[in-house]
Length: 142
Image: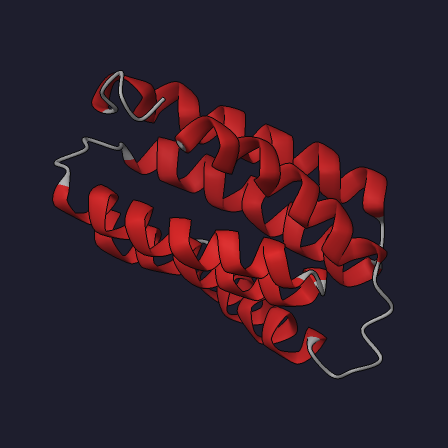
């Protein structure tokens, strides 16, 4: 399940960037980006990090405009958020800070409608997070 989520995360970032967003859905992403940019220099604890990521996944799924993608991310967001909040993951401030920067660059590319850059940063974010979270995931979830 996690592997599918990680692959689709890149696709949903690219898809969200490709949409025109004339429907006003971009406002949530802009608010998320502004808040993240304002708080980027403030260390973030694990629970806040997970909740923030869950919020971003919800926003991206909505921006994708794909009902099936939205349903998939709604279900996996609920499952993974609960799973990750229950895990005792020793993420260093450096791990969280780096992935937050990459995540913000992805969000900004989506905001700008740059599908290529959004895809690159989404993949980079996934790889950065996966590298330090991998030891905490059991074989059934990967």
